[in-house]
Structure formats: structure tokens, C-alpha cells
Amino acid sequence: MSNKVFFGIIIAAIVAGFAYMTITHMNRERSSLEFNSLSDIQKKGVIRVGIYEERKPWSYTIDDKSVGYNVDLANKIAEDLGVKPEFVYINSAERITALEANTVDLVVANLSITEQRKEKVLFTDPYLNTELGIVKPVGMAPLPDDLVDIDFNKIIVKRGSVAYNYIEDLYGFHADKLKVVENDIEAKTMLLSSDEYLMLTDNTDSIAFGKNYPQLEAPISHSFIGPEYPLAAAVHFGNESLKNAVNKTMNNGDFLKTIYDKDLTTYLGSENRSLFTVID
Image 1 (cartoon, rainbow, N blue to C red):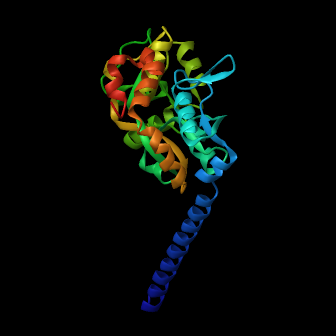
Image 2 (image 1 turned 30 degrees about the vertical axis):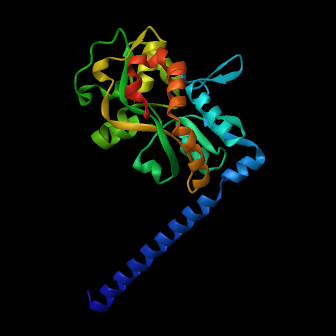
Image 3 (image 1 turned 60 degrees about the vertical axis):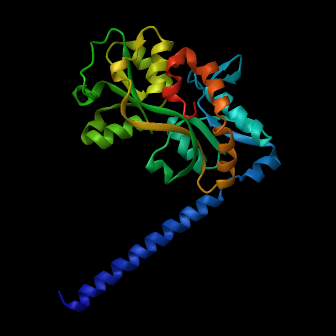
């Protein structure tokens, strides 16, 4: 290969790389403009909040009214902003895409902070600390100590969850064996239908499942798996004004402790409050 051809290839590669970076930047810049800023939301008097429809104790309905920890948190955020909340039901896989599509202004739906997600949304300050945990049928045999020794065909994970990414990152090819579901209703159906399946999820969820259903248990030996994943609310990428305003609520330690005691003590235990709350 002549020097002329070689340098021509190098220059072409540099130009292509520059073009890709420029397009990526333009897409990010364009995306960051498509949201309702804090002033837009306050002018409208409404903030659209993405929450789960039925995920006790986080958000669920009683007499057609949304209640739960995330609902109380979202209501307080709206109150502090001087607006009313409008709840939009989303599932795990929609938490990021709902913000990107501007169908919600804020997501309060047990969203763990990860480096990958930071590329797509802006996270507020965290409000809870979590790790991963397992919930399984009471009738299932005791679990092996190491997660890799569990039959991956029997492990339920929710699409778009940290649990799925954790398996994929650590164990690679095992991820395609997982039983991937869209929401808690599907997971609950599989867990309660037989002693065959277990679920890997946030330990706040695994412990809550164990408390909600006598047929299920969350073994303490498998309730603190992997690194810590703080939970936070999220806003559209670039919406700094809204993020900063929401952080005022996120840093209200007395309020966070109050709603933990009100909504989570029954499920996670008063003795565990210091493990899960960010501000104690």
C-alpha cells in the first residue's frame, strides 16, 4: 500500500469520526431542547410525573386514588414547586424513554443511578440506597451461596432493570437465559404460580415482595448483592432548572424520614431505615 493511499484512509477515518461526533452532539443538543423547563411547568401549573401503576408500597391505587412512597414524594415535589401533579403510568422499560419523548417531566419510579443512564437523563440527588436482592417461593429449595450457581433459566428480571444489566455485565452469555418480564404483575404471576422461579431485583422490592405475599420470602443471605445503587428521580437531559428545584425536596431529610416511616416501615422494617435512607 502506498503512502498516499495509507494517508488517504487515515484522513477519511478522521473525517468520518468527526462527522459522527458532530451528529451525536447535534442530536444531544436537539434532544436537550425538547422539554418543559421549570418556568414552563410553573406557568402551566402542572408537572407530569411518571410512576408505576401497581407496585406496592411505591405507587398503587386505593379507591381510584394513587398512594404510596413515590406518590407522597411526587406530591411533595409538586407542592414545593407550587404546581399540581399529573400522574402518568409507566413500566420499568419506559422510565428513560418517557423522558426522552417528553411525555413526562419527571420520573419517580425507583430509578437507579447508573453511568449508562446518566448519558440519557439528568438524575436528582438520591432519596434511597439499594442493592440487589432475591425473592423466591417459600417452597423453593435453599439457594446456593454464589449467584452464578443458580440456574439462570429460573431467574426473573424486569426489562430495563439494573438486575438485568448486572447479570449481563458480570456473566455475559447467561443473560439470554433470563426470564425477562415487563412489570411487577408479570413477575408476581410467575412467582406465585409455582415454586420454579425466583426474582432478582432491587432489595427494597425483594424485601417488600416477601412482606406482601406469605408464599414468598426474601432470604437475608441474598438480600444485599452487588454494589450499591442509589435511587433518584430523573428529568429530561438538559433540564437543569427542574433538577435543581426538585433537589430542594430531595434534601429535606425530615420529610424523607417521615414518608419512610409512613409508607415503608411495614415492608422494609423500621430497623432498616438507616440502611435505605440517604439522609438519616
